[in-house]
Image (cartoon, rainbow, N blue to C red; front, side, top):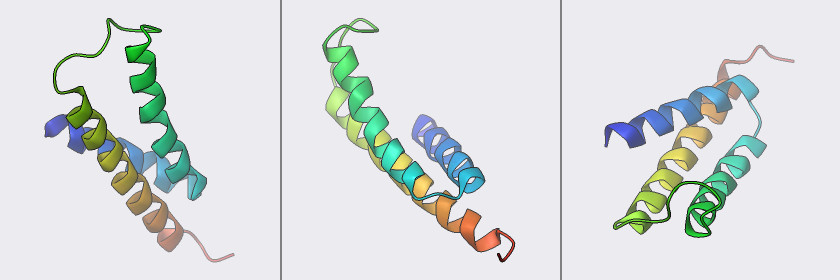
Length: 80
């Protein structure tokens, strides 16, 4: 759970800095690419037990963090 909280916090900070909704889309694309790479042995040593739960948790934490960060960044930004 601590790892998922750290992932969500990192995504929120990056999204708040960029203040772009594309950050949410990018975050949603990165985790599937990471797990496909593990499965194909592009990096790491393959998938272990519980990989699906880890993938869903990481994707959800990143999506929630990036969405919240983007929203907060836009709310706190100086009016244009």
